Image (tube, rainbow, N blue to C red; front, side, top):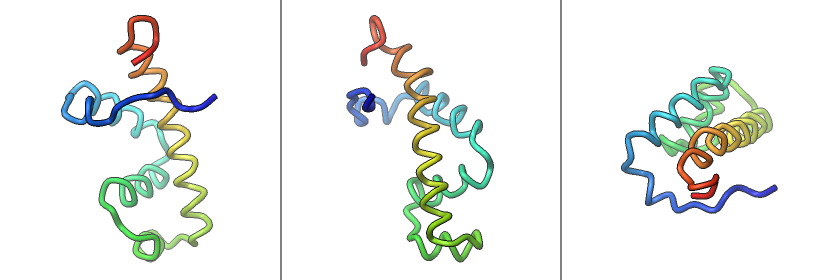
Length: 89
């Protein structure tokens, strides 16, 4: 099943969303969360992250994939289902 349809601009300024996002991020293994934050929130390049965390590019991409999938599942369970009349956004 694909991700639920949503409009990021509609939630980017909502404190409740960011609290749930932080809670979901905290459930990830520390290094996986670090990789996600450095890449997606800080905008660091692959080579910079690999150098800083001493991981290979392949390992970086595996960790990013795992982070994205885990965050997607957690947000779908804890944000999207809570925000909709019956589970839709």
